[in-house]
Length: 84
Image (cartoon, rainbow, N blue to C red; front, top):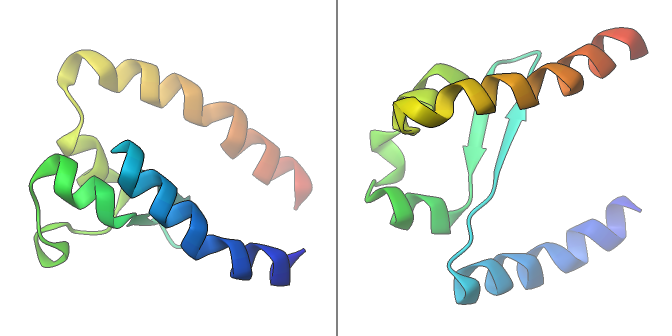
């Protein structure tokens, strides 16, 4: 499965670029957030301008949308906690 993801990663990145969709990944234990290149373009940032933490991510989200983001994250955090 990891090999398949590794091979298809560039295709996903290209599809996101063409569709102007971005993605991000939050590594909860280390509290690091990784953005796709498209998200940097959407937010008008260079990679060095983004702190790479969940808090830095939230600061880029419109204040009216932050509660929805927070509510959506808890099921994932809870599943991670249960799996330990």
